[in-house]
Figure: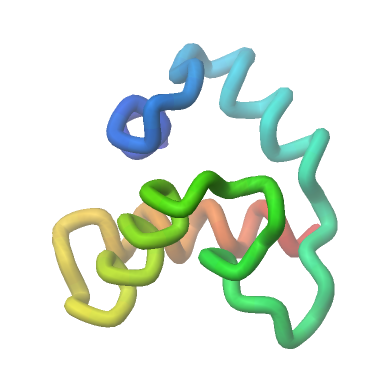
Length: 70
C-alpha cells in the first residue's frame, strides 16, 4: 500500500496511509474508486488503468478500494 501511495504522489508512511483512508471513507456505493473527487486527474488515471489493465497495482488498488468502503 505504501508503494501505491508513493506512485500516487501522496505521503506514504503507514500513519499517513491510515489517515488518508480514515479521512476519505466511506466511498458511496456505486462510485468507482477512480471517480472519487479527492483524486487529481493523474492519480485517477493510474487507479483506473491499474484496474482496467489488471496491472501490477490492481490488487493493491482493490485493497485500497475495500478499505475506503468501510
